[in-house]
Length: 608
Image (cartoon, rainbow, N blue to C red):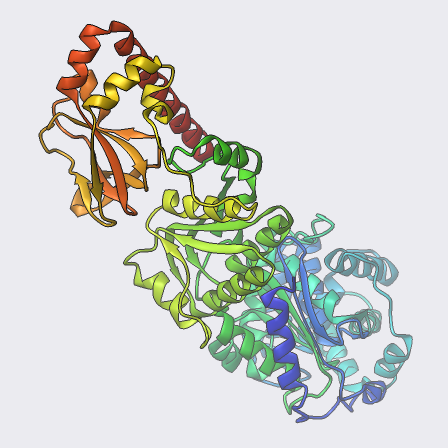
C-alpha cells in the first residue's frame, strides 16, 4: 500500500511542475545546460525511510548547498573559537556573491555567503590543499552515505569564470583570514561546489543534520551534535541569502539553497528535505523549491517553532488481542478460535500531540504489521491532540486498509474535541463517520467479532438447559432437575438495566439463556468501566452464594435477554439437602474466579 506521504508529495510535484517561472543560472556557463523541466522532491526520515517524487535521481551540482557541510568540517577541525575569529555569524542582507566583510577585522559576515564559504574551506584540517580536499570529500561522503564525484565540466567552468571570487579570496588573504595560498583554498571551494548529488542525496544529507549529525542509514557520525547546532543556526539566519528573513518567517525550516537548483531543508529531530529544480528567482533560489517547501511547511505544520517532539515518541506500546483479549467469557468454539488467531488484532498506544511526522512513523509501523493483521485499535488515551494534516493522513490510511479488508478503530476519545474534530473534518464526503469505542475492551470485543465472523461462525447459540451453564457444570442430572424445578424465567429488553451497583442484594441469581449483558463498575464523575461481557450459559449475581449482601456492579442488557432466575435462599435449602451440589457450585465459582485472575494478570503483563 502506498503511503499517504508519498501520495502527498506526488500531488505537490504534479501541481508545481507547471510553474515555469524563473531562469537557469547563467553566470556559470556550464549551468545553462540544465533542463528547466527537471524537478524532484525527496523527504528522508530519521530511520532512513525515503519518500520521493519526480526527478530525484537526476544528478546536479551542490553549489552553495555545500557550504553548511564544509563549515561544519571547519568547526570540527579548528574548534568553535578559532573559526568564530575568522568567520562571523551575522546575516549580511546582501547577495550570495557580495564582498561582505567586517570593516575592522576583514572577517566575512557569515559562512553562507561566498566570502565566508571560501574562508571556511581554507580552515578545513590539512597541511596541504590536497589534504584539505581529501578531508572535504570524505566529510561530505559521510553525510550522503556514499562517495561523491565531481562534475569536472562545471568545476572548470567555475574556475575559468570565477573572477569575483578570486577578488574575494585575495581580500581574505589581505586581512589575514586565509593564512596560506588563497588560490588553493579557492580551487577547493570551486570543487566542493561541483560535487554531483541527486535530490535523494540532498535529502539524506539534510536528514543527517536532522539526526544530530548521524547518517540515518549508515549510522556513521558526520558531525558532532554540538556543531550541528551551530550549522543549523547559521542556516536559519543566513541560508537563503537576502531572502533568509522572509524564508524563516514564511517557511520556518533551517535551509540552504544553491544556484544548481537545490534546496536542502532540515527539521531537527524529525527529517530532512531535498528539492531540486534549476529555475531560479532573482535572488538565486529555486522557484519550485521555495514553493514546495512552503507547501510542506504549511500543510504538514513543519515550522521549526511548532514543537512536536520526536516522531518516534508518538507510538508507545504495541500488543495483540492474544495478549489482551476482551473481558467477555466466550463459548468454547470462539475461545479456541481467538486463542489461535487473536494476534491478528493489534493495539497501538499513541502518545502526545500527533503531527505529520509522528503519524508517518505510526503508519509505517502499521504497514509493516498489516500482512498479519485484521484489525488495528488506535488507543488515543494518551493523545493530547491531532493536527489537521495528521488527521487527513490517518483517515487516508484507514480507508486504504479498509479496501484491503483491514479494520482500523479508535478507542478512548469520547468528549475530546482536539482529537474528534480533526478526524471528523478529515472525513470524505461519502463517509458517515469513523468507528470509536469508549474503552479498549469494547474495541477489542468488536474486533474479535469481526475476526470470528470471518471464519463463518454466527451468533452464539442459546442455552437450552441448565447443564450448559458454567455454574452447574459437573452437577448430577437428578440434582439439575431439582434446580430447574425451583427456577423461574424473566426477559429484559435491550438497553435495560438488570442490576445496579450498590443496590441491596435481593437474593436473585441470574443464568443467561439468551442474549448478552455487560458488567459495569462505576467510576468517578458518573463514568463506568466494563469489566466483562456475558453470553448464554453464563451467570451473574452468584456472589450472593459467598455471602455478598450488595450488588458490586451494574448489569446492562446489550441485547434482548432471557434469564433463568434462582432465589439464593431456595438454592441454599437445596444445597443443605444435597451437599454435593454446594461442593459443585463452590468448585465452579472458584474456577471462574481463577480464570478472571489469570485474564487480569495477562492484561497487566500486556500493558507492563
